[in-house]
Image (tube, rainbow, N blue to C red; front, side):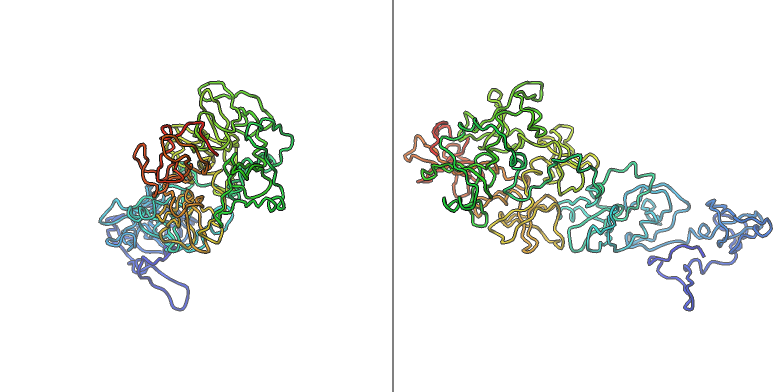
Length: 622
């Protein structure tokens, strides 16, 4: 009769057992004649399938006196006195009440006519038909939301493939306590926040949550221009031939890095300035045979073997590399082969774009100061060459580029940050480099959820996605760790079929799976990205600061020794502090998680920052 669907919340309806004929209960029980109808009081209205006036006037359409809709054949109530009709949808508005599970205590009634209003189910503004609560008239939901499926499979809007393999369940709220227990997840489609009073679709097997309008794309067309952008389409927004040297992140493993991509195939390089790098000659290891002859073991986390380059402080996992010829005299200096090809000076283009064809000596700094950044195998006036990189905000004692007059230094990894990259976490879209700015305070890194106002990053303008430079370049796709016999993969969101809590297998703390982490799907083990690099003393020297995704000493090579003064023993080792080291002999503060010097023969230990009282800046022993 009314041509509208019959849904579960209608509770009961009539149907013919012999044929496909069904009626709403309120349609089936409509009287043939109504007197004093609230929408047309004082006159009798007669139920008819056709409008009687069409018979005499030979009209093809008639118009509802109430909603102004035009019909040809449709049940209506006709007034002979006034020669007007109203369709039965308008005539039965007051009877169209539903019992909806989202508002179980009260019935909802259909609001007369079309209105433009915000829906209390999805939070979006709709132009159309609404239901409202009889007792709580401010509660209103759009008819499309009232009819949402209790379960659905979510499909991507661009390539027609399922974005999540499990059915999603409709939930009528997302309480603050539940969101807090799940570390305040964001919508997996638009990356926006949830409102605890609005409906969502969620997975019962995974930590997958999505807005109802994102899951169903039920947004009015005229409202779409006012809504924030989503995470973008899967189609590429750039052409490969226009970006032939584009860097694709993350790097495949710990042994891969930016310098390898830039200098591995570099042939014609002047290396005369490398005579100042190390006091001993360097031997080239370029075959497995050369390794075997010298009994050199490559970096292997599974065996707790750590072999770090003194230039970039990244693992040496393959040949070729250079090693000090005086290794029998306890000199462990070692370099990647590509770290011997760095230019003696860099300028603005290299710092921002990686262009190796312009090696002019001047660099423009922020504020209009002109200077040049020169290659520094060791930052002067710094004990063991330890300096703070002004780009990645990490300590390093590897090679640097800098200006000694301004004391401005960047590690060699940051000296060649590319202008554009792509990243697996946001596939198909070009990411452009952005500098830190106070204007970016309200924008957050996709990896660590920290603000973009301090560290440089990459930005996708079409989707408004940000990733810190160091998160993009310093977290490899796969790592190996002695705690798991399988490789651990970098995860950008909670793992599938894992709805329980996430605990780091190194520090044993619970962590937020909406920040990037490493995970083994075979063993169901997980690690903080900051804890994962710890392979030597990982049982004790854990680093569980969940706010930092990068291990703060990732660019520091520990193990060297210095000569001490004012102490009965001669040598102290440069190490990372652990709990058993106790407190600093100078300032009394804890040594754990800091750079420290530890006497090789007793419990005497002090912070790196407190070393002035015990170590001369030129007292390095090895």
